[in-house]
Length: 292
Image 1 (tube, rainbow, N blue to C red):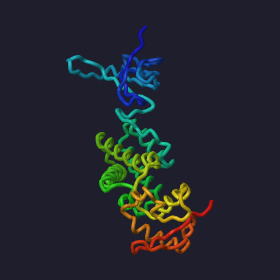
Image 2 (image 1 turned 30 degrees about the vertical axis):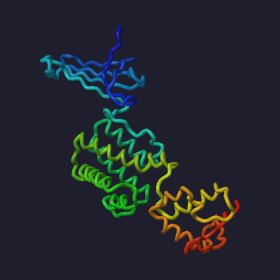
Image 3 (image 1 turned 60 degrees about the vertical axis):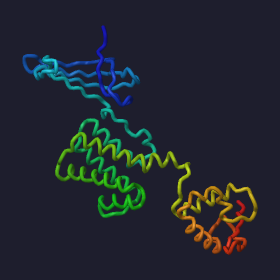
Image 4 (image 1 turned 90 degrees about the vertical axis):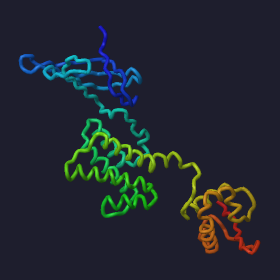
């Protein structure tokens, strides 16, 4: 006996695929009362071979006419774990803070069962959780989103999109307005873009060179370079930086001026000030690297 094949959304393939029925159990009502049947099945995707639980409900007393003019009874399918059709969730959720990850996953589960009103509140809560994790100040979410952008975590365009999610969540929580499916899926894209940008990509690219725009990061770079340096005993900042100078082009003069002051005052704990030489009418500060 051939097994039933169902076309279902697969949580692993992230698209609709053929699923084979492996086992099933059905309960059918008395046709003389109200004729319907509920079936529970274990199914397996024929693409990735992942398993799922399927509930099929046949309502034999509710009919519709299809595009070919044929009369069919209503059939409803529910899969578990819930699946958001054609959606590929963030895979590296282990890079997310626990609080952010939990809210994000719970929101996905809510979307999977098509509870769009609750999901919109979950998306708003995800923004709140990110602000809390990053210690973003503000008396309310509106201010915190603005500060999220001012602190350099998101772009101005991202800020406007997060405000859209704030409105969506506020409408759901305060006015009990359920968003449209298309709108909630766009909001999900915005949230996942934010999480990818703030957490996932930063973790992936942490070893890639990029510009340095704050003095503390500049000092960390110098300390790293000093540990790797194998040249002369007495050097200047240009020699130590070498090609890494490109990382501070926009802040070079500001950083070096402050570095020279800190060096003279003995605040650079991994370098020793040695002397100052005048070259081309400029004071060049020479230093040595402290033994470790």
